[in-house]
Structures are given as C-alpha cells and as structure tokens.
Amino acid sequence: MIKALCFDMDGLIFDTETLRKEIFLSQNKKLKHPVDLSMREKWMSLKEDKVRESLRVNYPELDVDAYRDEYKRLVIEQFEKGNYAVKCGFDEIFAFAKSKGLKVALATGSNYRTIETLFLNKGYDYRSMFDFVVTNDEIKDSKPAPDIYLRCCEYFGIEPKEVVVLEDSLNGVNAGLNAGCQTIMVVDTVEPTDDIREKGAIICNSLFEAKEYVEKFLNS
Image (cartoon, rainbow, N blue to C red; front, side, top):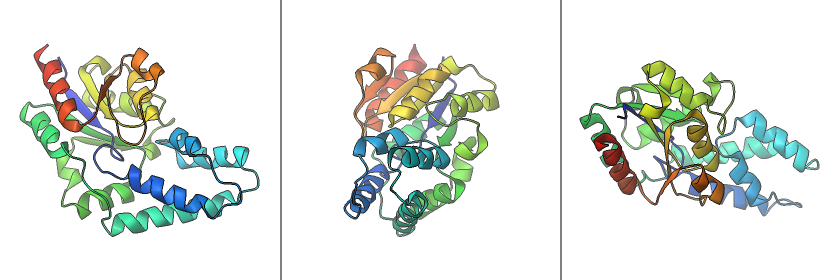
C-alpha cells in the first residue's frame, strides 16, 4: 500500500523545461562553440555547482560563470512574467492524492525563490499544499542520487516502497529508482531510455495517465 506521493516540479508540475530549453538554444546561437543539447539533459536536476563544473571540463574556452548567470537571469525573468503553463492533469492528480489521504511532497532541484515564483504566479500557495518540501540546497547529493527521496521517506517515517515518485527527467527517475520508490516517468522534453525501462520505471505520457497508475497502486 502506498502512503505518499512525491512530485518533482520543473517539467512535471509546470511546463518550464520547454522554456529553459528555448533559452538554452537561444544562448547557443551566440556562442562560437555551442554547448551540445545532450549536455543540458545530463544537467537536469543537478546542483548548480555540478553544472558549472561540467561546463568548465567540457568547454574550457567558455566564460562559465557569465554564461550560467545570464541563463539563470533570463529564466527567472520569464518565470516572473508567468510565461509558463501548469501541466495538464496536475490539479486532478494532486486532488486525488489528497482525497485518498496520501502525504504529498515536493522534491525539486530548484531553489525556494523559484518555487515561490512558479506557484504564486499561477495562484497556488505551495506552503499549504505540500506536507513536505525539500530542495537541492538541503541534501548532500542531487538527483540521480537517492538523497532527496530518501529524505522524504525519512520525514514521513515510511518505507521507500510505500512512496510513488513522479518525475520527468532521467536524473530524477533514477533518483526515485535508486531510493527504492515506485517511480513514474511522465515524459516531457526527454524520452525514456532502455535503461530506465529495464530498471522498472513506469512510463506515462501525461499526469492523467500517471493518476491511473496511482489508483492501481492504492488498489493492489
């Protein structure tokens, strides 16, 4: 029996990864040596210092701090303007979880400024919604390490097998799987790999579909 549902945020609750990708590609047009798109996918959910470290190793000619500072500025600027959408099915799956008495957590690589901006601009009070919120700033190792989801389990006092994780990135899905949680990948800008499927992740194309799996878990 599952007892909790853990939500990622970017690309899962809000359609922000599309925006982030657009800004990434726009920045690339200005670079003499563009950053490979596959690198961006590897960075999803990582701590910022790890992203910058990766850039310095792979693009030594790049002014990494200026590049990333500008990227983050552009992203926040668009967030503050509300130029993103709530993912279809979020309200429904969240309400369903609450109606069944499940604990709900937000486990995200974004910081609290971003969390507050994204939720408040769309009319949500995240503090009253979630039973627990944890970010990269509060754990040792970011996704794909299991730390962030193990932290949720510890907070709720339940076993990982009693938790369903909802994720869209490969790093996030691996974090859920590595923690031993039931893990659902809701496909957004990144496609699931054979490795992800072989590890037992459930693949869905929407939060509506994910809700059906949560119902099955509750009834099993």
